[in-house]
Length: 287
Image (tube, rainbow, N blue to C red; front, side, top):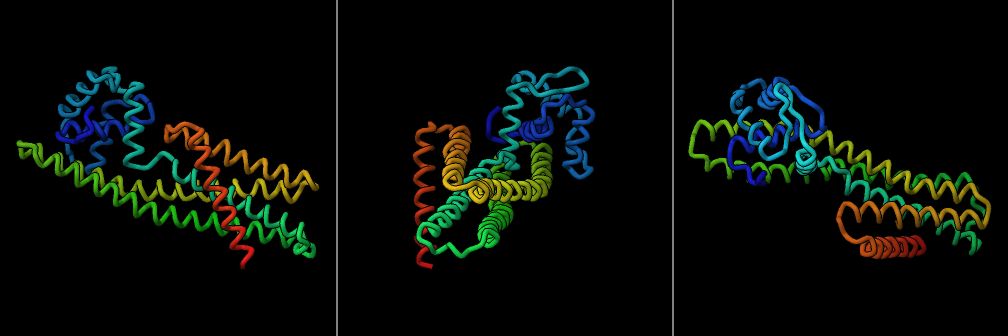
């Protein structure tokens, strides 16, 4: 399948891929009804146009046509997930990375600050309740900030992206010589992006929740370990957990999603965490 959306079957193909991206067997009648729902009860396409597109997708080995039902092949599933990720931002990449980075850095800064204050004697008179309150207040503030940033900023960015994609699609479809098919294609794209706009608000809410929860967990686990274990197990265990979060889970996740060698990703991650931690400690010391 070409990336360009140049004809009506291309638009129908994208909608079919989105509808079947979960890999389930779907009756053709249900698929036609789902496409009609995109058009807000308007009959945008005929059953013959749907069958023509399904026949093309079958020849491209994107779907399995079982007569009355259809299902995506492995290749179709992969392509459907890519379109879903492009249009709906369903792949939690940035939010998980940001959550792990911010959470581990916050936890590391809190742990090192408490440890340094004990070494210097400045934290001798601080009670355990005070330390716990301050630590989780800081972590909660970071998690809430991440939530609002991803929810509001994500919606703005994603809506801008799909508006650009919609403009490009409309530009390609406007070259269709047949006026009836051109108008039908443009109408279907317009209705599709109205549906996508609503879905983007929902997916950004999920992304914001994922980021804030990831941030809180990545920071709270090492802090809890540090506060509950005796010295010197507290500092050793908590720093080991931070190293595991940043050095294993974060590096492995980034390396897999970006398809960059893990050694390069490890070096980048360690450099960012080290710089951010030192800067936070210095600013905290001056404050």
